Each structure stands twice: as C-alpha cells, then as structure tokens.
Amino acid sequence: MARLISLLSDFGTKDPFVGELKAVIFSICPEAKLVDITHEVERFDIRMGAFMLARAAPSFPAGTVHLAVVDPGVGGQRRPMAVQTNRSLYVGPDNGLLIPAAEREGIRRVYHLTNESLMLDRISSTFHGRDVFAPVAAHLACGTPIQETGEELTNYIRLSFGEPEFDRRGATCKVIHIDHFGNVITNILQQNMARLKTRGELTIALRRKRFTTRLVRAYSSLAEKELGLIVGSHGFLEIAGRETDASKRLRAKNGDTIRIASC
Image (cartoon, rainbow, N blue to C red; front, side):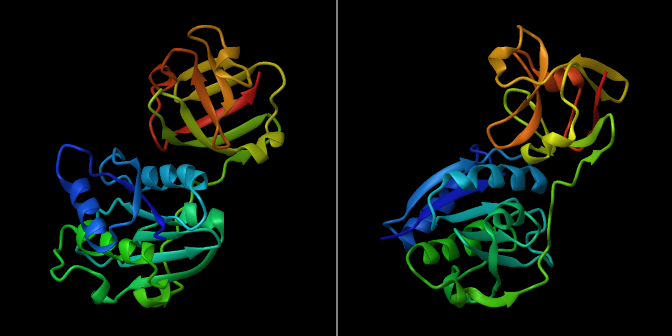
C-alpha cells in the first residue's frame, strides 16, 4: 500500500506547475494519494513555507511523505534532500524549509539526493520540484528505502522561528506568520505562556502603535472589532481580532518585533 504524499509549494495555481508535480508522482506511483497543504506560500518565502509545513504535518498520519518546494536557490549550490523522522519522510531543498517540521518529530537521518535513477531522465536547472523532488517522493511512497536516495548528511541548513525574550513585565517576540484572517502569529509557544504576565490588561506595542488588550480563550470571547491575545490551534500565541483584520490594525508584517507587557 502506497504512502500518503502531502504537497506544499509557492507555485500558486495559475501555472501548470502543481499539475506537473502530480502527474510525475502518478506516473511513478499510480496508487499514491495526494493531499495539498497549500500552494499559496509567498514567492521565495522559505520561513513562511517552513511554518505552514510545521503547522500542518502533525495532522497527517504516520508514514506520510511530505513534499515541500519553496526553492529560490534552485539550480545553484543548495542540495536536494530527504529527511527521515520518527514519524514521517520529508523531501525538498536543503534551505531550512523542512527542518522545523522534521525536528518536531525527531530527526533520525538526513540524505543528500544523489541517486539519479530515482529522478527524471532530464533534470532542468529551474524545476527540481518536478524533475527531482516529485519523483523521489513518489519512489519513497511506493516503498523505496530512503537509504537508496543518496548519501547521509549531517551539515544540513537549520531554520528556527527564534526565541522570544521574557522579562518581569512581559515579552519581546517576533511575527512569524499572518494568516488568511489577519491573525498575527508570534513565536511565543503555549508552553512558555506561564512566563508571560497575562492577568488583567496587556499592552501590545509595534513601532509607534499601541493597543490595550487581554488574553482570551476563543475569538468569540472578544467584542466585535476588539483585538485580543489567544493561543491558536497550533500552539502559538497570536494577536487576533473578532471579525477584523488584526494585521492591518497593527500594520504588522512577517519579521516584525512586537512587545507584549502588563499595563
């Protein structure tokens, strides 16, 4: 029985790129089942792709092959790679994209994809998603051992979402993602919430903008258009608004520094 393959990329849906990935996979492993995580990662935004993959991967069954392609270094010196974790397999570029998701599951081995017999006959310098990653993922899904993909790596590129800084009054954190609803997701994890003073009113400061807010359990706990702090479904603290776009209210963007402190 073939493994499930998830797909994530910055390809969008206007061009045939995603269709070509799927066509290559089915030509090698016709019984594979495919699930699209998203193809709307911002172009070339490795950090955004890594965050989305790390959020989505835990929802998939054990044994899934995750194929992720956000690859501004295609055709250059970056290496193609496959990762074996305690739960899944990952295929994509060695640019940090796969690592946050894989580290959450416990990395067992990492391989440099060098076995060209698992790739298409002609490998372009601009579309390794189709010519390298998709065929390797298909072979893995149909039972090829990951050890056959190439040589083991130990010096792969790591990417993290950084660590917030806590003090007596609050925390200084980073924006790591803004979702479709305008929720501003920070790098404060749920398990670190005890270090943030959350009783009573809190102040959110971003550049010259300041808002007074509070921590709530659900979006419905906020009044209409009110901004609040909430731990989202993926375990990160986010600044949200009820039926309003918090990112626009704050004029926030990925990478911004935000200060959250008690009043």
